[in-house]
Amino acid sequence: MPERVPFTGTPYSHAGRTRPSGRLGHMPLRFGLFGTGPWATATQAPAIAAHPDAELVGVWGRDPAKAAALAGESGVRAYADVDELLADVDAVAVALPPDVQAEIAERAAKAGRHLMLDKPLALTVEGADRVVAAADAAGVASVVFFTARFMDNVTAALRELTATGGWQGSRVAHLSSIFQPGNPYGASPWRRQHGGLWDVGPHALSQVLPVLGPVAEVSAIEGPRGSTNLLLRHESGAVSTVTLSVDAPPAAVLRDITFYGEHGIAEVPRGEGEVRAAFGRAIDVLRAEIAGTKHDVGVHFGRDVVAVLAAAERSRADGRIIKL
Image 1 (tube, rainbow, N blue to C red):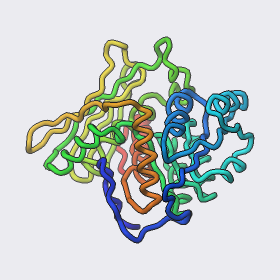
Image 2: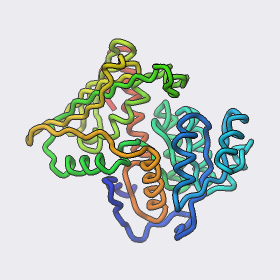
Image 3: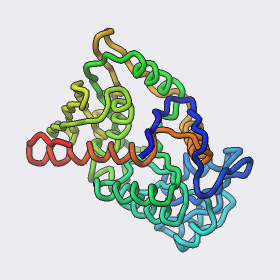
């Protein structure tokens, strides 16, 4: 497998690498949107429609009425058949529960469609592996949308931290409170079932792994209100502690990622900018990969994140340290 170059906010060019679909040039990247929930309606559909080099072709959803409503708002067609929408597009954008996303992504990759996916990639390592295998076999481009990784101030901070080196570990707390009145994500069945480990955990890991490297061992215990507390040993020898929740008391909402090491301590700033703009940046990265530029926020990285989450789930259940 070719070496993957870290995505740090500025594309890296690699000559001689092309995708089966060829270079897009000035042609818009035609997207099929899979999903009709609040993420699809508030972020993905408007971001694709607003992007100068993208085109929203149609919408598919598990609820035909919601698909028709979103398609009507977006001025596009609602599709009743997955394969029919895949036949009309260059790429898919998926805003579905992770287990459903993995099935759609595998199917889309096998059809030769590029992948714009949400986090987490899947709910099992096996599901993530199938997406990776399908994407590799078809040679399609992929991006997993870890939101902060597409915000300029965060990518700049991670680039500086990686260049500095000498970090011995990190302390992370990502505490959300989604079950409050008016929060659209509180009604999400998969978030209620799988909690902060699988919902906000990917956001945290997407900023820790680029700096400290792959995880070798995972230990996890459950805390109050369904929170999860992780102890991670990285292959580099660094150690991370991570606290995750989507049901924190409203007064205790917190996002903190702090690294410590030979040069002292350094905090990763909270992402700045509008989420739709970040999704537009992700479209830029997907188009760049189609044209031959590598990055490290695709399905391979998404699979690595799923492996840590799955190990944490096993450790939390039986109290063992899980080796990856």
